[in-house]
Image: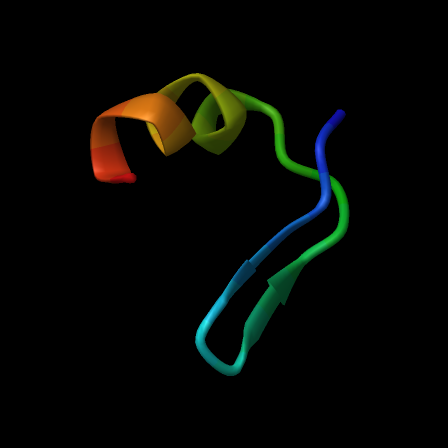
Length: 25
């Protein structure tokens, strides 16, 4: 689990999105 801050959206528990963080970044 990785804690990423997307603007005002605070993702504490990222599961599938965690793999897409690299794609979104």
